[in-house]
Amino acid sequence: MGRCLLHSKWPHRAAPPTAVVPGPVWTPLIPATMPDIVEFGKQFPLGRHAQSAEMAPAYVFLASERASFITAEILNATGGTPLP
Image 1 (cartoon, rainbow, N blue to C red):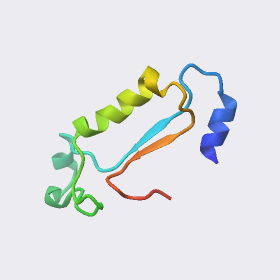
Image 2: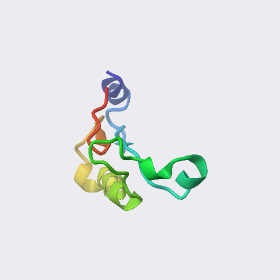
Image 3: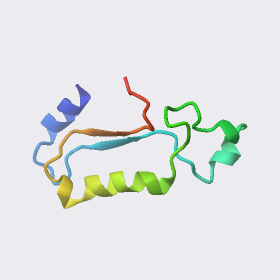
Image 4: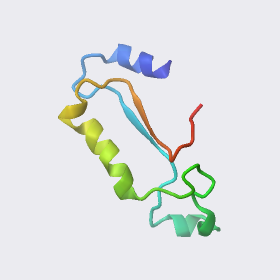
């Protein structure tokens, strides 16, 4: 419902509302903020965390001309975890 509301408010924007929902992504801050980095991402269906390089193409695609007809969509890059 939220996607429809955003799209109805800005249907003619040059960059309509779209989103990437990332799953667990490894960053340099993970070791400093998590006590058990060995288990980070293992609870997800793919059994591992993503690398930034794996996530970047999703953002690049949505920012490209190839996605010009895609509006108010959410790209789930969650490692197989379904979202509510």
